[in-house]
Length: 233
Image (cartoon, rainbow, N blue to C red; front, side, top):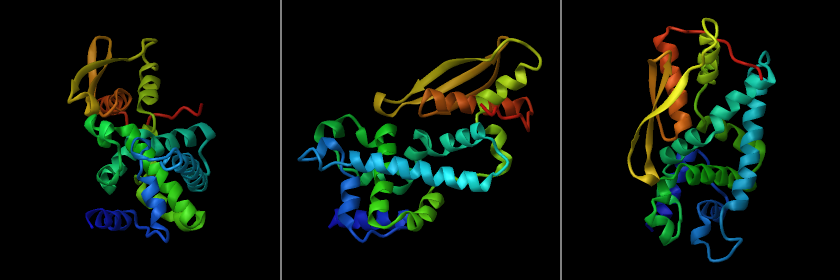
C-alpha cells in the first residue's frame, strides 16, 4: 500500500499520470534489484536521454534564434547535466521510490547523483513510451529549471571569468579544492578560484566541477562583471 501511494505521489509531482504504471515501476528499478537482465531501467534511461536532449535542443533552438551552436550547447549542457537532474530527482522524491539491491542500499546509492540522474532519464523514457513526444514535451520543460536570457552570460562562468581576466593579464585563474564535506557517497565540495594569489570566490557543489562553476560565478559577482561574453565554441 505504501509503495502504491508513493507512485501516486510521484505522478502528481511529475504532472503526468501513467496509463501503464508498470512502465514507471520499470523506470524506478535499478539493475541491482532486478531479477532478470531486461527487468531494469537501463534501456529506458538510454531512450529517455535521447528524448530529453531532443526536447531541450528544440526548445532552445526556438527560444533563442540569435544564439550560435556553441552557446546553445552550453545552455543545454547546464540544463540536462548531472547536478540539476539529480536535484530534480530529489525534488520529485525519486530517491524514495527507487528500487535498489541490498548492497547498493548499504552504500547510499539512493543519494548518488549519477544514479538519480539516470533514473530521471529512465522516467522520461517511460513517459515517452506511455504516450508521445507532443504530450510529454511540456511536462519535461516544466520540470527543468527556469531560464532567463539575462542569465546567458553565466552559462559557463569559468569561461566568462577567464575571458574577463585575459583582458588584463595572460595569467589564468587557478581552482583549488578547499574542503570536502560529508561521507563518500554524499560529498559536498568547496572550491576556491584564485588569481595572482588572491581568492576571488568560493563555490560549493556536489561535484568539484559544479563547485568550480559556482566559485567562478561568485568571482564574477565580486568583480562586478555583469555581462561577460559567452564563447561560441
